Length: 244
Image 1 (cartoon, rainbow, N blue to C red):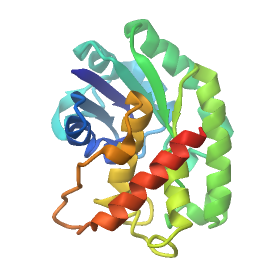
Image 2 (image 1 turned 45 degrees about the vertical axis):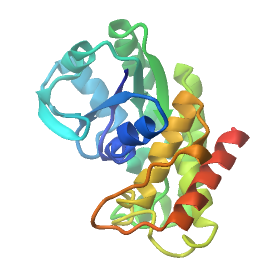
Image 3 (image 1 turned 90 degrees about the vertical axis):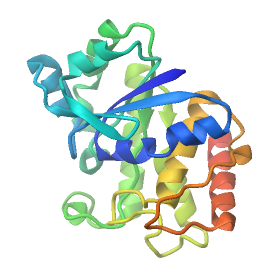
């Protein structure tokens, strides 16, 4: 059993939704925990590392277990993998990663054997701050976040899971061109296709498995998924990962 902890927010919640079942379908057992504060930034994570406040919802395999502090969460399990990411609005602002090294060092001191990864988040379709920060330009946001996450990966010597690149690549092709089927509200991933693409990317990067051979199908009752679109997602994830 591989134990994964995300020092995250709702975007790691999206990525983890199907991950345990998707991995199990490919013969890899994992358990997932997410430290959830909506919109939580690296700076806020660093603040809570120092104040030891039980500010997080501790989501274990998708179920909120209790409130917890960052130090207590790091001590809760013998974590094999720990992921980081920036708050979605700030993800393309390089200066917002100023405390990443300190946060990673804090985590490393308490979890010396864990493998670190960074989830590259994705550009918005829409968001209340989209115009203020990125001038309402999805391609500009994607370019900014790509550069910022590449820098972040180098800062803490962690592989970047290219979820943002996968989402952007899918948007260039039918059936996702010019619609919002990959996000449910303009920024969180859609309950079926978007979350599936993220989980598949995590599986492929973390375990090196053949993503095209995964037979798990997302099953959220609020979003019907079509097998032919799932196959397109698998092909795209495989192509993006092969190009890394």
